[in-house]
Length: 147
Image (cartoon, rainbow, N blue to C red; front, side, top):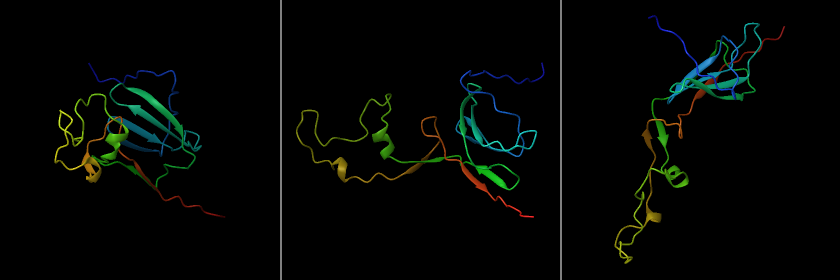
């Protein structure tokens, strides 16, 4: 059987218009389609995000800049920079043991461990996730000619 294209439709997100001269980039399991022009050469100032696992469009957002053309690029790295302070702000429900020691033993008596507040947690590289996707960097060299 020949390969075929299938799409799970999301009624909350309209399908993107056919386009050319757009930018695209993949971060984690998401495909980003940015700007471009429709088949009548009208600028499309939007961003669509396609979830590669569920095969559905998950977001449409306005992007009020002419992006795409033939002098632009969108890139994303294979790894993202993880900021340890993100763990404190967005604790994962799957995490069962604390990230840091509290400085007390199970009996409640103080221990000689270094206190959490005095530690410096440095960023490190990690694969992107849905919760923390990679940054997508856009570069566009848009030239305007006056006649």
